[in-house]
Image (cartoon, rainbow, N blue to C red):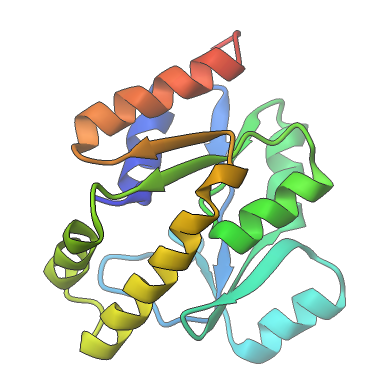
Length: 174
């Protein structure tokens, strides 16, 4: 189970938090819903958002563009809630530069072998894409020391509890 599952489970216990939806140019996977899982858009639409400075952060990851619309974050904050984002290393470090109060939590699988097993099990990438993702994960793990917290996702229940404990330690009003 990945970071999206952890976030979904944690949000059930955190009524004062909401996840900001990320925009992407990648195709929709089975079970994903537009406007809920991601904002799916063409490369031209994404470039338009970049050129109008409508993204808090953006990066090209695994050949697709991903970014966090500023409007999504602003709406959550205006509603009096705290924002949770699921972003890659590039996005997280960009956000930390812009928002010093951001708390970065790096979620890592117990091993690269387990990451590969999980990727194969979800059946959304071919062999080449899995290899690309494993190589990217190696580079990202090297940057995990730049995060405030690093947690290992061995078991989804344990990892969810650990995530909740980290959030509650940072936001005492949870």
